[in-house]
Length: 567
Image 1: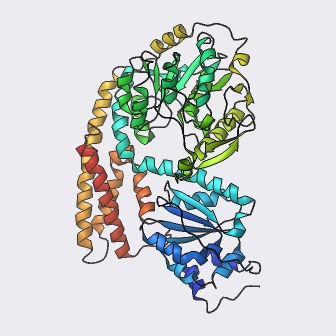
Image 2 (image 1 turned 135 degrees about the vertical axis):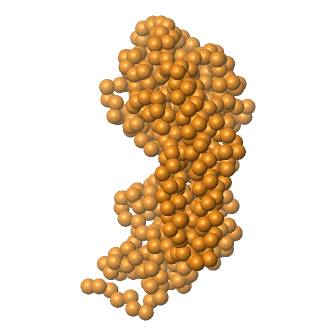
């Protein structure tokens, strides 16, 4: 029997803002009385404050004070009991919350993942805080809900940042694409090292325990070092066979400039910070990895580089150079694959192995105050059943590697390091696992294949020509943006979008540079400028939206032109 909510103004507000909930409320079970709660977000850096349990609505006065301090702050109530939402409609602050543009209510149905992805996509920020009402905190699903929310936030924020900062990434991409004609194609190494052991080296504290054995295995296993591990190994007297770099940030250069593996071949992703080329003198190998976005794909298609990207089955949570190194080792046919220095925890309260950074000791109290979703401090048991500190991003990486290993049952994976470990991957010592490995001249094999798989030097001419076309297209986009802003200002006088705006918007969407360099930026700006609003915009709102969007485009395109990022 359908329930009657007549005369409830909060219900009218709920119906307007969350119409899908009205139908569900008709079939909810009787309401339970929930205790009142008080909340005060602990850290000023928090951008979105998630509260599990609508009973937290009783804290509206303090929450309102908090959101008013920053217009970008949001409070999101997560509720999985319809009866609690029904009770909320009769509570003291229901009308204020339902009318508050900085507060939102989301109903969760199990499994939570799909709904959480939808919620987080509306607020793709980095700094979040999650709390539960007293009664909900005791629920067994709360801890899992927290971890799910943090993991999804980490991935969504990373993807959104890539899109919003795509114009900054152009500085890396364009300079590195110009290096393709002078590189070998690393993807051609596919199947070239079948049943050769590979050692994937991380820069975790326990790497030091492996230095001695690694020095004795140089002619028995392919040693791969990614990012900080290049510095850690080379400064301990171990020269990897292949270095791998993918980090777009300047910190990659800062770490690598103290390394001493100058002549080691470097496998690179196009996104890597281009200053790293000042730290090495070995041969360069370009790796098709889908990490450089549509710009990378555009030039690959132009030049006929049609190799399948390395690691498509790693999943969305593969965010590190370690996972890329793993996928590359599998692609080459290496077997077994051994992990060393991949602690994924603060072993001995250290972040890195020695000689990576000057100060590696961590302070748990400081880390606990970090509100970045990826860096959220967790306590987990390591492979020795001891409690250690780890982070959300490391738990994600551990599970990502374990899942990847399950998909490749023809390969043996071994963890030969301390730390968090990997589910269903055996633990052993490097000495034990390498006891029967046979000598092989790996340097000669690598050198031969690098010469064999060089990319065409004549690519330089095609790349330069395409850059000119893209530069001209960016200038057209810039001119269209200024015209759109002028037309939109004029349209405000009649309070309605004009045909000129619609035609210009169509031309804007068809431009070469938009589709080659920024294909997802427009829709991402749309989401951020109007989060969680599914309703149809009125004419005045549409004009205001156009102004905000094209002002954003104006800033982006000015930056690209002024910095000569394509030239």
